[in-house]
Image 1 (cartoon, rainbow, N blue to C red):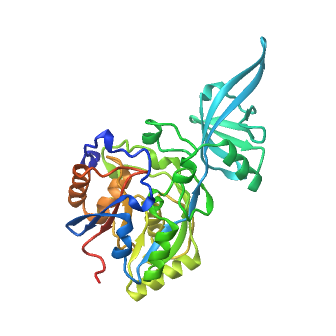
Image 2 (image 1 turned 180 degrees about the vertical axis):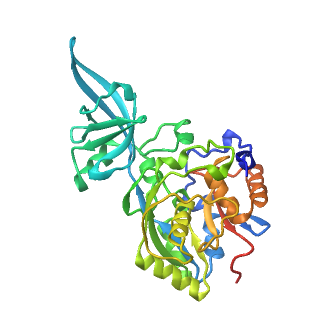
Image 3 (image 1 turned 90 degrees about the vertical axis):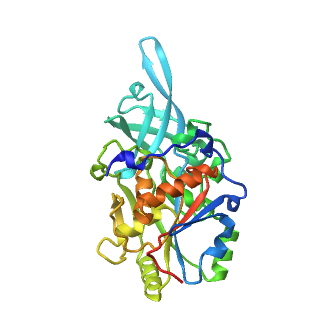
Length: 354
């Protein structure tokens, strides 16, 4: 299985830099077996059935991009350097792993000041990254970070425009609860409280899980034999209650439909023993064609990058040739791609039928 098998041409004009407004106005490509239908996210109320269970990732994106200043005494007197920091993931002892630009202007032990309230000490520098310890913890840290930080837009959006205040709302789901992600579970961005209420009124059930999406989700695959690719680790939790809810829906014959690849990867990790079970820890699960799904019956997801592990994941669910046709249709019809783009609902023909 070669990396080039998962390539396709994507015109730059189809990369979405802003979300649809309202969120439910985004287009929705329904792929059910070999049938493709062009709809909108608002139509989900007609597509999901009573007894279906949507699995939602309730991670909360932190404003992980920070602009700070490093001060240092030199032979010529006090000097300062501007430092851009991107938080990547929490580390033990309350520290954070982060990127810094320019990293060469920092030394272990130095302080970076981001605001009158927020600063961090450089603990160590290694392998092109650094570990830092902030001066605040808990709610005080959250409040100071919210005031000083900017949302960590994906590189393909950041290359086209700078983050702004609107992204603090746009790049966050309406059910975000647990801080820790540096990238959003983007399929979930399409949901409004009104849509969730309408689905609940129809008899659709919901289960929340937590997977803190890391910056590694944007790392390119660099090996030609994709089966040798090693995934980045991400922390997640499927509670005992969540596992029980999913198992009950399966026993009743309902469909399990994760919203987003992050929720899918987490519940499949929790079911590696064959059945869904509580899970807490890191997962490096890599899903590509040939994978046997244990829990997932369908998937709602956005449109992914060429040669990405996420395109391999949806190809595992629907079949590689079928996904190639789906993506050609999406490009030909002008669907908007990536994090702020349109959505798809992928229902493989072999899964549960009404």
